[in-house]
Image (cartoon, rainbow, N blue to C red; front, side):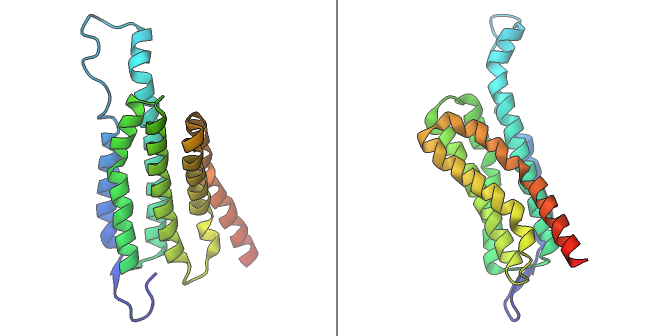
Length: 199
């Protein structure tokens, strides 16, 4: 939230832009699916699974990641109706990282066993999570409502640790990503406890 006397922007102006970017990015996740892979004839179930399953799993992962950060982004826009210049620039960086999500997700779907691709994807997810956490920190710090920062902090910690792990054990990262999806449940639990303490 912007300080007194500091130039600020209304966060609702970003809502339509961010919804469009998240929506387009989530739609484009399916664009990287292979096409014309079965020119020799009608495929059987084994051929379909071999060609499409890695892409499908990557698409679901990318969709859940985008959905989780869209939800967090919408909550933050509602929580902090005014944004400083720093928050505006960080929000634009977050949206840029979401625009790139279909590209890195497509790479992961095509080369899901390649260590360098796993590391690239893990680093991309960590960047998204860190930008989201930074935005929440800037929104929460003036009011000191620290209970709102639980989910972004957990998600950022998991994605950053997963990126570090991907440099040494790439295949572990694929299973560790799912841990980040418990962040919204943690947020709901922390916020319920905070409300009980206040009442």
